Image (cartoon, rainbow, N blue to C red; front, top):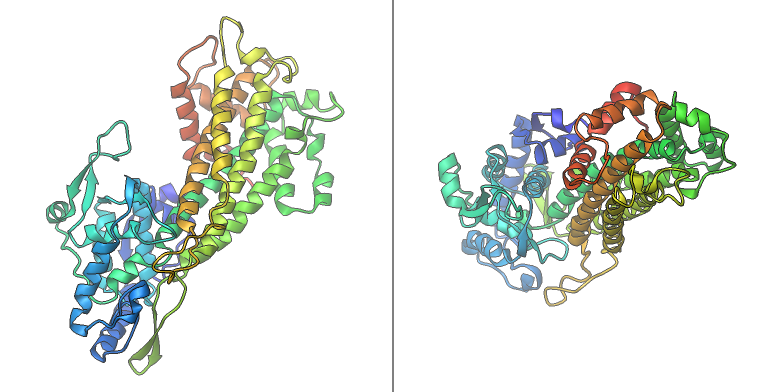
Length: 524
C-alpha cells in the first residue's frame, strides 16, 4: 500500500494504478496533465464541434435526454441544454458525500472523459483538476441515486459556479462543523474561473459509472488492506487460543487446490515462525475449533472475492462509460455512437462481492473475539480477559460491539444489483442499482475495520496472560508497538479511544507496514 507516498499523479493515458488513484482521493496528491493527455482531449472536442456545426442528430447533443430523445434541439440551444440538464439533475438529497468520496469522484470524472471519447473541453477538465489541487470539497448529497445521475449534478453545479462547496470540516462530523459556501465565492478566492459548458459536456459529466466506480475504488483499496490485517490478526488469535499449526501444513492446502488458501496458510506460518506459544501447543490437541482449523480456507475464500472484484473494478476505471461516445474515422472526421456503456452492472455486482467478503471475514473475526473472551471456550483464559472478573467487565462489551457491527454488515451485504426500478418513463429499464451497492460496500469494509481492530486489541490482551511464553518475533513487534500507546487493561476503563486507535492502525496499514518491514510482503 504505497498510495500515501505518492505526491503527484500525471495523467497520460488515464490507466492509473489503485495506489495512484487513492493517492489523489485519500492522501491529497496533486494531479497534472501531460501534453499527450491534453492533445487527446482536444481532438475529441474538435469532433463534437464539427458534429454540431454540421447539425448531426446525436443523443444529448442535438436531442433531449432519456425519454426526451424524441425531441430535437435547435443547435442554437445546444449550450443552454447542457446547463439545464445539470440544474434539473441536481436533486440528490440527504447527507453529503465525504471529502474522500468527492475527491475520488472528481478524479474519475477526469479519467472517464480524459480518454477522448467524451468530447469534453480541456478547460472543463482543468476546473475539476484545480478543485482537486486546491483541495476544494464540493457539496453533493449522497442519497437518491439508482445507478448514476442526481449525485453528479451537484458536482457540476459547483464547477459552473452555481452550486456549493463545504468548508470547515465535513458536515456529517460531530466535530468540525462543516458548512455550505457558494462555490462562486471560493472559486473567486482561489482564482478558478467557472466552467462554461458547451454541448455534450453536461451529459458526459453526469453519465455513466463515474460515481459508482469512484466509490468502488475506495472500497476495493480498503478491502485489500483489511484482508491483510485479518491475516495478522488471525496469527495473533492462533497464539491467544494456543492453536495447533498442524492445520496449516502445506500438504493440506495443496489438496484443496485454491491459490489464495495456500498462500494464506503460508502467511500464517510465516507470522507464527519462532513462537514459543505455538511450539509448546503444537501437539496439545487433536484438532482446533473451526475458526482456527479452517482459518486459511476462510481467509483464502474472502481474498479470492476481493481479487476478482479488483480485476473488474480496475477494468472499469480504465474504461469509458459515456453515451454517446466519439470515435475518429480519419481525415479529421469521426462518428458518435449511441450505446449502453453507462450501465453499472459490472461494478455493481463486484462491489456486492466486496460486501459479501466483508461479511464472511467478519463472521470469522467476530467468533474469534467471542472465543477469546468466553472463559467456557478460551481454554483457561480469565473470563472477559481481565484479572478480577465480576468487579471488572473487561472485554465483555467490546465483543457486543463486534457482534453488532457484524450484524449490520450481514444486512448490508445483501446484493443490490439483483434489484431494479424503472425510471424515465420506462426508457431506463433495467437499472443496475450499482450506486447503492458501491456505497454500502464502503460501509461494510469500514465496519469490518472496527471488528478487526477489536480482534487485535483482544488478542494482545489474551497473549499477555500467556507470559512468560514468547510470541513470534514479528508478532512481538506488533504487540510492543501497540503497547506504546494502548496499555494492558488491568481494570475497567474508557475503552472507546483504544478501539478507535486500533481501527486507525488497521485502516492506515500501520500493522501491515510493521509486519512486512520484518518478514517481507504478505502474499495476497
